[in-house]
Image (cartoon, rainbow, N blue to C red):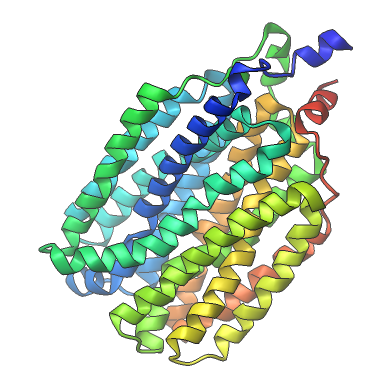
Length: 420
């Protein structure tokens, strides 16, 4: 029994020592922030870009869908490769390339080139995400997995949704063109790649011992045999969709339907990010104590109310900001808890594979297909159609969350048990 469990337990001190834990968390949070900044800074710029490039609402949905589709497929592939080959090389390469491609977005001359650049960028952003989450899990003691993955992921709304709209508008006012905004945004990624190269050691868990090799031949079959992982793979599609729809199409809803000024639109959109950051910080940590399922179901119920109220609200920036904050906080908390559920239910050396598959499925359906449908609805029925569609996604996601089994709270030990 002792020998068997040792096969699945990380090296005791170096891999999970406080300095290593904090350094890994800081680097992965920095990278995760840039992934989301590069992805979402385009949408507040879209009203300006659309006039120059001749784009419409459906084109926004197509661009968002292209990024999400390649992101999702890449997460599935590189999540598995990260478990086999290690995290570090994938992390460095992905940050470097997606930053360069973000800058190249400023060279786009129309829909075709914009789709191509952003789709390829999605490949490398998708490669970064599961490897970075797994690196945080690798370096975290079991009792802090929820907190640490939540801290990492709060960078997505804090930077991608809160900072990106404000930064985009500020840079647009001081730079010659929207094209230069992408160039400036790309620069921090080069620093991040260098820091990962210099500071991040290869996590010990990603290197399997000889006794683990047979399990690595078909890890996807292993992780999908867990009911919670299978449910999360479907549920993530509906939990992610509202956030992507809000992030990509709400700027146009606020500007074109409610006729808010550019500064007011930026304020409301920034509340989406602040709320998301708060939710990702608070709810995963609470789930470490009170259970994942209970918190996920509660958050989904609470997210639906402000989303419904948004449909009844006119051009009132403060009320809109409050409702966006609440909707984003609750749904983002659910998204962040998914990775803790994964860590609770699969062997440690398969966390990246499971995370990559869940993210991949979610991005393909919730990140690609859902905003494409929402963009088509907006073009056919008006931009206001995006809110009922987002609400329907939340309701479906709630039903799936209710079906989850209460996750176990000893991820490493339970992971070892699954391998027997």
